[in-house]
Image 1: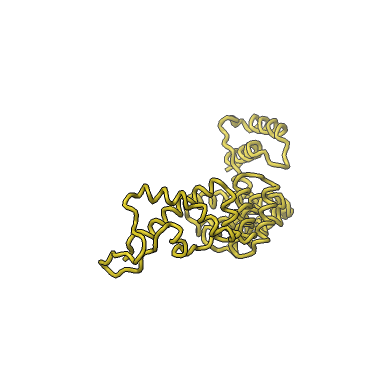
Image 2 (image 1 turned 90 degrees about the horizontal axis):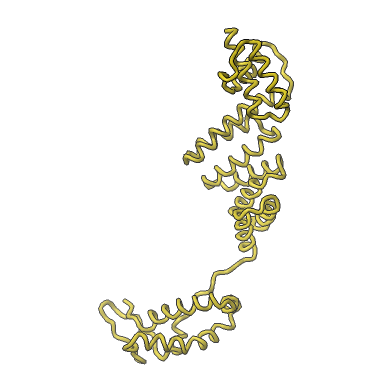
Length: 296
């Protein structure tokens, strides 16, 4: 038992060296590790880093009537919570979202407000909630993460997503702007652009009444035909040569543009030459199908 304890002491010192714990001096730890290993006659190269000693001490503190300081207890909890976080991350990657949610919840129960740790647990659980479609919970957890660490960009990104899904578009814009200010990544910029688009009330292009435009192309739309009846209504017949129709469409397109020029949504579209070309092509095909093809 004594030899095992001595090994655990060396293992814990090596663990502190490897993890570079914030409260430690790594250079001093290396000297201490070598001295302890030499004094206990344990080959340093045979020692594996482990925090098992801390776990045993934390769990047995009450039994041994050891009065642990709040800082020491918090540190022990953070070690355990980080293990749960790592398991939760793996479950998330595997698509086991309920399991991941439970693991992050357990980590939060151990460390609800530990600096440097807890904000990640809340933000990670917010990501799980988003996969489960629980958007109110996304907002709640992401907000808590931003309160614990106001510099954590991922938390603001997830908060923006949650607010967008729950209808608070202006709040989503603010959250996404904060995320971009902290981390101007493409992901954050795209989220901000989408939030602003929704905040601006972007509208889809209005549906057009093609029947009112039929006369521009020298023909009349076919009437609704019964099954098996492909006869056209009175008016111009479809050109025998499709190429001739395309030429007519090309000539008539300015008139089509004029017909929709009073619509502000379409005007913004027409201002872009590339968008104009795409619209021309799609409308040409749509109008050809509407005017000249039989419908059953």
